Amino acid sequence: LDFIGGVVVTNFLSSSDDEIVAESFQRLSSSMFTLFHVMVGGMSTAKLDASSQAPGHVVVIIEYVEELYPYMWIYWIVFVFLGYISILALVPSLFVMLSLRDTEVTKKRKEALEWQQRVDRHQKALEMVFVAADVDGSNSVSRDEIEAVFQSPDILRQLNFQDEEEMDDDGECVVH
Image (tube, rainbow, N blue to C red; front, side):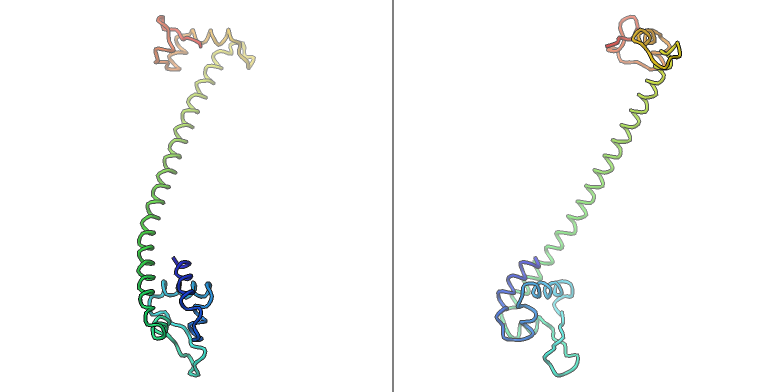
C-alpha cells in the first residue's frame, strides 16, 4: 500500500515548486517515507521547515499540501482509509495463520511420538524374539531357530498376537 500510494502521490506532487512538498514527494523513496510517517503518526505528521528563518518551525505536512493543492484531501482520505482497512484485514489473518501453523506442528509432534512409541514396541518384541530364538548363544539366528520360537505358545502370548490372520486354526503363528 505504501508503494502504490507513493507512486500515486509522487506523480501528483513531483513537479511542485514548493521546497517542502518537493523534499517530501519528489522521489518515490521520500514519498514512501512520508506516507509511512502518515500511516504511523496519523494525519498530523509534522516536518521541520528548513526554509523558514524561525528556529524549530514545524509544518504539518498534510495541511501544508492541502493548502497548496486543495483537492489532495481526497487522496489523503483514500490512502488512510485503505491503509487502515488493509491493517485490519492483515492482523486477524496473521493470527489465523499462526494458529494453523501451531496446529500443524502439534499434529506432527503427536504423529512423531506415536511413531516412535510403535518403533520402540516393535524393537522390544524383536529383541525378545531374538533372545528366545538364539538358544545356542551365537548372537545370530537361523530360519529354523526363528520358526521354532514362533511355534512356542509362550512366546506368542508374550508377543500378544491377537490378529487371526497371523495365527492358524491350531493357534500357531503363520510365518509369511
